[in-house]
Image 1 (cartoon, rainbow, N blue to C red):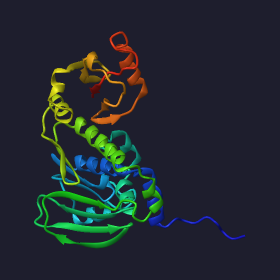
Image 2: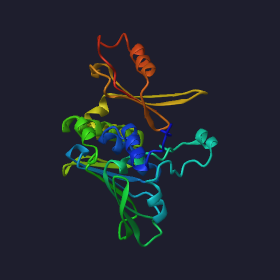
Image 3: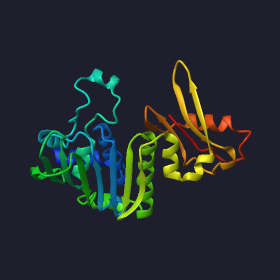
Length: 287
């Protein structure tokens, strides 16, 4: 009987991984912005076109990459975060598995420009469907610019699965806001089809929330702070009279990273049960 088990080609394995890691344009936005933060960027710009289907570009002023690192970052499980299994318990950065860039490159046309601050020239890398098309020195600003074009161009069925532009843009904005709220000390900007959507300057959490939702939130927010032997809790809660009908603007962060937790949602609702109309939810931001 013939052997039937075989290793998948890297290109096929990356496309399969892309379905798990890069579920929609917003997934790529999240991964690219988190990479910029891990690179020590203080200014991060997001540019999208056609709800991210035609273009997702993230430009940062972070540490930049060497020629070798620029090439290696697109290999599966290539990471600067860990060298042994024990390192998993000490990670404080955003990602470590080394799957995101490989997954993105497997289902898009990617152009990367990166330059370290102590170098005169940077590296230009073009990849299409996991295949390196071009790699050469280039003139560019310190930091990294990554352009993801024509997402899912080689998987039409996956592209057809995407929702309307309005829906996909909403998901992108949500991911952008979550990261921006978690890191008010960094500058962020976002452009969609040539129109500036956000320009957020570094500041404190109150200023960041106002920058995203408007200056009228200043009078609506009540600061909270609690320190225990287990954790430190800080943030803002909106006054009960400004409660909403959905939990869409309840944000919880742990170590500057957005989380979803039903227990925390219920804890907030229970705490304000006697102050809120039935079916209303309090807006909440905390770390």
